[in-house]
Image (cartoon, rainbow, N blue to C red):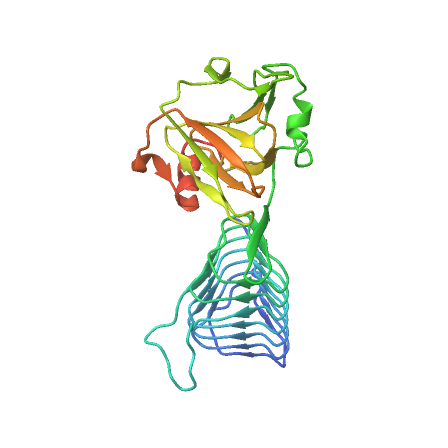
Length: 325
């Protein structure tokens, strides 16, 4: 019979915890107040001056720094970090002594981090692994692994976890291709790669042709252009069951994140003689568009709404089912 040690939760003598649903190993420090209906997971750290209302669920391994209030309707996933004086809200139109029938639910998914003094409006979802900058005002859902700053908060980057030995600074990927036509760099994520396309330059200008088998890895059934995207806006944020895509920055530059559910990497397209192959079952995001960017996309299949996966959690479940994560 295996023996194990149960570590009871710790309550500072100056704390007030009315809830009986506090996980093992959790520490509740001075002047924190937890109401009876709250549920706090294991190994959490509830710091000085934290207030937790009744309809609040906090997962395991969560850190809540000083001066934070967790209001009704808040759901916190595992291993979340909440910085000092971060502010949550649950009523878009608050009035004194006027209460809605139900408070809006705010969800913070696992491994997200919220910086000091950030403000989170009610009803938003902060995706897993997201990073909310200090003082940011979050007015809309934050995608998984995005880094956001500002008021209102906008995306400035994505967390990168590419396989060891493959990581290089952003914008270096196309440089290491060299100039040889057909040279290729494997991005290490779900079979995606960059390739130097056929290109010809003389005094009349430059030409990059695309032919199946000569740069283009499939017979395209659909092509389209993405342009006029404000630099802080994001495109993509989906994966396909069957459709493969081939991306070329025909003009200007755009950053692309590729994610296979286990590994994730960002690369920069800013050369019309470089193409990015995005296979099926790879989550793709395009952002950081230059003001005059034109992104050319070739697709291996016609448009089919049912081929799209737009929910990251659904994508992850399917990726796990095929052994990627």
